[in-house]
Amino acid sequence: MLFLVSVIFLFTNAIEFTNKKVETKKVTYPKYVDYNIPYLTNNFMAFKEAVAFKESQGKYGVINTLGYLGKYQFGKSTLKRFKIYNTNEFLQNPELQEKAFVALCKVNKWILRKDINRSVGKTINGIKITESGILAAAHLSGAGNVKKFLRSNGIQKFSDAYGASIQSYLRKFAGYDVSIIEANRKATV
Image (cartoon, rainbow, N blue to C red):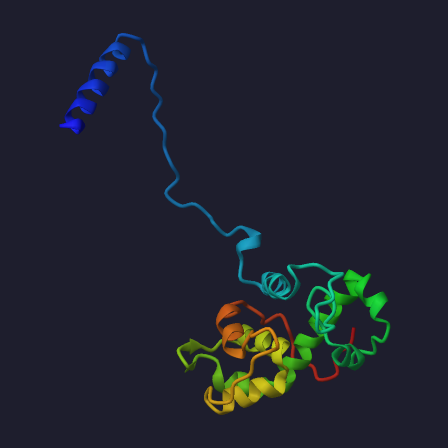
């Protein structure tokens, strides 16, 4: 009953407005809208920013409670591998942090090259394995732990002190195009 009263009220009010001259324009909408906006792509830059947001909310000067540093939360031993010894300078140098991330991805891709070839496209523990997921998981846990996970078909698991796991990184960072990264065991910054 209330619905009927509401409809009658709206209809009678609409009649009052019909006496006014109203112009109407025909609106056409495009049949295809390109949603390929740069920040929504799945390229390497989007991959880097997604990892950075997960690690530090994209902040260069962050040190977490375990002592991991910068936008990508590097450990001191990883930085030493790239001959970076001054952590204060590292924290204040965004360009160095970006170069270190790319170099680490190159090294991890070299270390995991056989596992990438064997595993991409497989499903392990309900997770579709992708190259970008593997590289992100290696950033989290190290390439050796990712090898153990993949070669054990998901039996050997790893989680960091905050509870982030190889599986969560494989899932969260799947599907990015990281083909721009060339495997290089001697990558430098």
